[in-house]
Length: 141
Figure: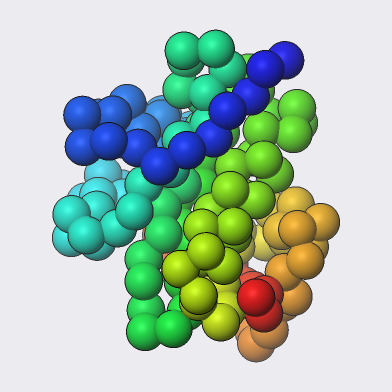
């Protein structure tokens, strides 16, 4: 499978949003008003493609010298194929390229092993976000 990951253009954002709505709103029942937020206007959005088809997305919010990774979503048919790790790796490389010192994220608890594979470490207690248990994870860059 030929996977490419890159920063999305403004025109590609609607495809990324469609993936997020499928994964978070349709599958996980996150309320629409909680999925879309004001950070979408200022975040750097990334996409993973199989050929010309976008199958995964994530975003990066610059927070001082840290990067907050979020809204990581992979279409169900492509999960378990390494696309998510490829996309996460691209986002982390971008963080390093712009000299951020750390990347952090809010992981759904079932996804903690996925982020651990990429070198993220859990911290703190489990908390609820949109009715789903999460834990903060960090990676020094």
